[in-house]
Image (cartoon, rainbow, N blue to C red; front, side, top):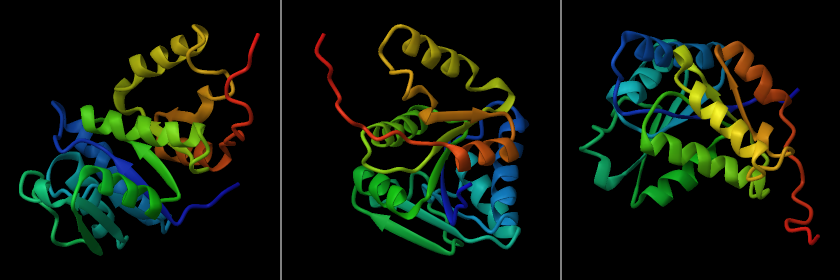
Length: 194
């Protein structure tokens, strides 16, 4: 079973339409701090992002934010973090977050969250890293996505050996356990001729 020093959390700069999303974000921050796991995230002070950071800090945890200069005012950079890294692009943000983290968790969010989660899963699939990726399925937020990924595997677009690369769970305890046990297969030969 693997233990984690730092986990990157991808989530929305919005709080969503119900209080349960922000409650879940605060729960994630507090949970990680209680396990002495540092948070790496996008560096914003608002929405789900701010809720994760504030809760982790309030629980005595360390929080590392990474934000592009261009988004520093739009996402309202969090100035109270353990450390805030200001970078020059989204690509630099994602690379730095990936290098700082031992694992990745996606919370409810929009385009940016989906893109970040899928990118690190793809990197796992291609063995650019061997770090686990999971989704915290708050109130069924990711139900349709998980079903679609199963469909993509059934239709032959995601190999069965790669489908488990994106774990999911409804609570942090279960998700962290799944991430700690996740095995990332070696890539081997990519294309097999008939």
